[in-house]
Image 1 (cartoon, rainbow, N blue to C red):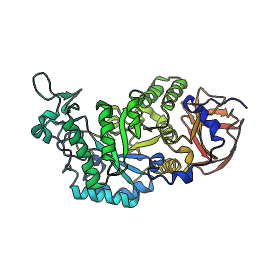
Image 2 (image 1 turned 180 degrees about the horizontal axis):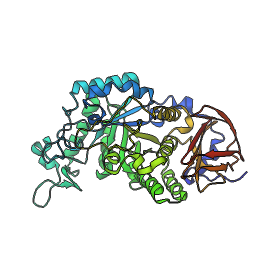
Image 3 (image 1 turned 60 degrees about the vertical axis):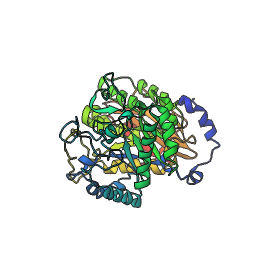
Image 4 (image 1 turned 135 degrees about the vertical axis):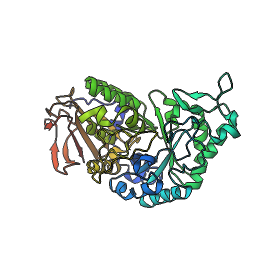
Amino acid sequence: MKKLILLPAIAALLLSCKTLKPTEKTSMENPQDWKKTTNIYEVNIRQYTPEGTFAAFEKNLPRLKKMGVKTLWLMPITPIAQLNKKGSLGSQYAAADYTSINPEFGTLETFKHLVDEAHRIGFKVIIDWVANHTGWDHVWTKSHPEYYLKDADGSFHKASGMDDIIELDYSNKEMRLAMIEAMKYWVKETNIDGFRCDLASWVEVDFWQQARPEVEKLKPLFFLGEFDELEAPEYGKVFDASYTWKWMHLTQDFYQKHLPLSELKNLLEQYSRLGDNSMRAWFTSNHDENSWNGTEYEKYGDFAPALAVFSATWNGVPLLYNGQELPMKNKRLEFFEKDPIPWTGKYELEDFYRTLFELKSENPALRGGDPAVTTFWVNTDANEKILAYLRKNGDREVLVLINTTKDPVNFKLDDDNVAGTFKNVFSKSKNELLKGSGVSLDAFGYLVYEK
């Protein structure tokens, strides 16, 4: 048997997996197990509907449930500071009060109703938490100006490159406690399931180490942090999942600058060495990327769907920005103005994402952050063109084959570990695959098999 090309951090696990039994039964006993099988759908309430309210968005929950969405991430729901605001509506990331609702979106009661209805249907709900900074006229600027960093002249310190926000002082112990109480407020008052923490690595890691156990005295929560764990590994010990900025930028360079596939593989191996104590969130778009850097099709062209396949099948959790199911090929949503998503009633990629999300949730080989799962490269006779990998958990497997080139590729599997009857998750056809099997992929095409 030809030696497999394994991800270095988990090479030893493959040998142990031969004797491991499937973990489905024991995993069901862990009430926090949903984190390993979830996906995240980012919701921009302002732009989701013409009304731009919680109540209007709530009407979309059945469709999102049908699409397989598991966790809803709502962009900031707090009031927006008016002093030095940008545009006519301001940034949702420039808070005026940490424990109030943005009246643009509705009331505390309509938000509670949204969370309750989402829970009833089966969603988890996390909210954006902006701990690094506030707007210029946040209530604390009047009641507790000592909570803020100051410049030499005594004025509030502007956040790097952003004139509408000012930074908090994390050396102030009272401010830290007030921030923690504000986080606890939303859990106690509305029963949310966690936080997406904006610019998490701009805040001292010891704050998160202090805050998380305190807030979780109320209930276990999901913490998604905006930081790349390769740059800030210490934060990965606090958060359930982190961003993959390096992957997002490198895949864009790969597509636009025609880099060798080995560079993508090398980066994935770096991520694998971070281990399974936390997960990575894989994405092709989010609110920042869409508004400032372009849609996933502007960045990746016809390679975008294949990268979505990767995001849902690699170790971690897939993240989707609202509207990607349309898709919004050329539509960048305004950040500081009203600019609704151009819904047409047709969701061209709804079945595509449903298939991926259901596979992620139901096949234990795709559990994120689970050491019982082994991920390794699959050898082909076109390794310079084909991204091929197999994920295994006991006798359950998912095989992914992605053509990373703009030309069709015919190739053969050259790996003894691929053997047996696999089901194509999109066509539902069954295929016998083994070493020597021939495969054809269109330009930027993909195949996903499970067993």
